[in-house]
Image 1: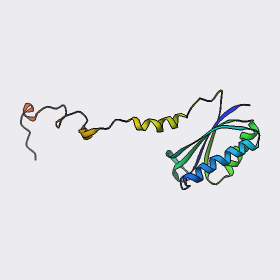
Image 2: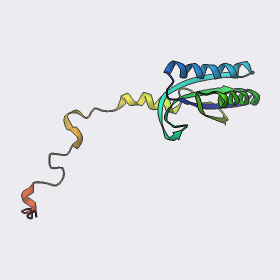
Image 3: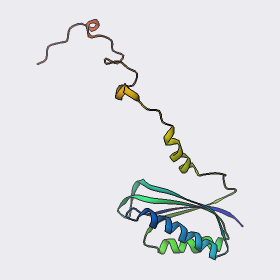
Image 4: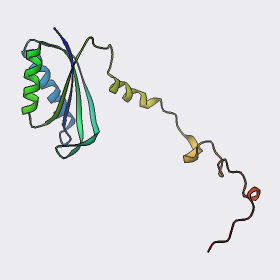
Length: 144
C-alpha cells in the first residue's frame, strides 16, 4: 500500500484534548477503511501566514499512514465535512522518516538556546557599542 503523510489544521477555539481527539478520529477512519496509521503527532497551536475562515491560529496535527487510496479519499471527504477542520494536506511519500517530524524536532531544540546572562539587548558590545568614546569625534553641533 502507498505511504502518505497528512497535516490537519483545526480551529483555534478547540481545546488541546479536542484537537488530539480529532486526530484520533481520523486515525480510526483510516483504520476502518483498511489502512494502518504508523504514527500521529500533535504540533500544538501555531500562527498561520494568513487568515483561514477568519482564524489567525490553528491546532496542527500530523499523521503517517500506510493506506489504500480509498481510505485516504474517505478521510479527506470526512475532514472537509467536519466543521472543526479548516485545512487538510495529504502527500504521497516514498518512505517515512524514522523518529519525530521536523516540527517536533524544532520544539525539542528550543531548550538548547543559550542564556543571554547580564549582557541585555546589547550583546557583547560595551555601553557605546563600537563607536568609541565621544571625545574622539569632536564637539556636537548646536541643536536648533
